[in-house]
Image (cartoon, rainbow, N blue to C red; front, side, top):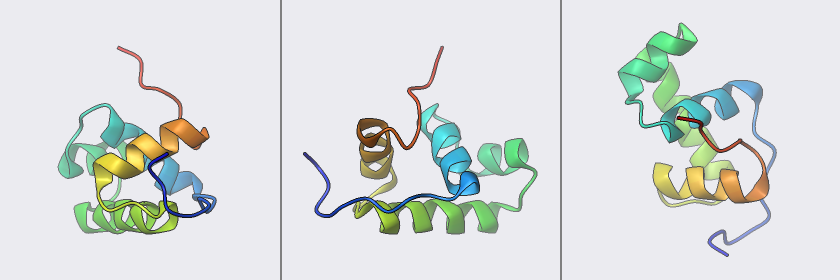
Length: 75
């Protein structure tokens, strides 16, 4: 397992931002999709990384997928 602690529950916005990031969208694209400012999305992603005990956005996506916090992206 990748995570070092028990994952915290993510907010709906954090899950949405992480789910969109998991599809390969960059911060600007996630911000546009969520109708948020890019700095707000960076904050959401940073919060998700912290809550999941991850060291990076990629690790947070993997942990969120493994723990069921987000669903696997569809093509």
